[in-house]
Image (cartoon, rainbow, N blue to C red; front, side, top):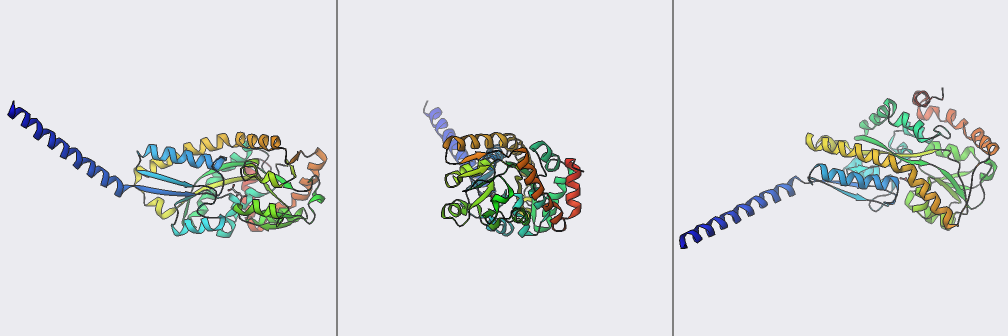
Length: 340
Ligand code: LMR
């Protein structure tokens, strides 16, 4: 009995040591091998981009069995628009999803084609570019900047807002309109007779509240989650332009990942993209309904005649910007969407 108990005790102690040793090995190995992806973005978690980023985190951690940890920093918590691109290139963060309107300062002007007014009538048409060869080729342009483009994420179609009604192009005369850092958006506001002002997304609410700017453009999901409707009396459901994102990573970081890990992250990104793009329209519809219910902003549709006047005022922006964006890029996009 005695010896049996002793044997059991020794075996138990050994098992304990082994278990401890194993867990120590496993613990230290996993701590050393842990790959952390800092994913910075500027919008609220409760938006198409915020939800897609959180979905990527969930799937990336699941598919790599926790070897990868994705830390998502929403709402410009870490960096504002321009800073986040610099931080990515320096390797201070690994992943971002800036809007396609923000790549100009980096020297990638071709993405500003996505800002051209009235080029994409709906998501399906837009996807012919972002989910086809033209979109892929455009992501490839980022490589020369030390950036790998992984996917396009949708937000939606923009509405115009201000504290005065915006029915006709003339209604924009002299209004200070906040824009993203895109020359196409600058040309768009100039074509309407407005005064464009580039401002970081995190500063827009305050800019509108204090009157530094009179109005702005954004899809409903951004307008609602930043509470812009509380400081904008009028909005026109013009759907005059698209807002979407390129999900990008620091190329050196991405290329340095073990192949198996990169494979799992690719899979997670593909599924997060399908998820995010699948909910984008609904998220914007819900945000618009919530703003209508809040009653602080009067929303109006363009009449067919008003729409004609907007199209007439804004279509010349395409020719004006051809040199900047590249006539070849515009042509490829027009061919893909079937406007040629
Ligand atoms: C903006 O600055 O208006 C947008 O690009 C914000 C965003 O990321 O959706």
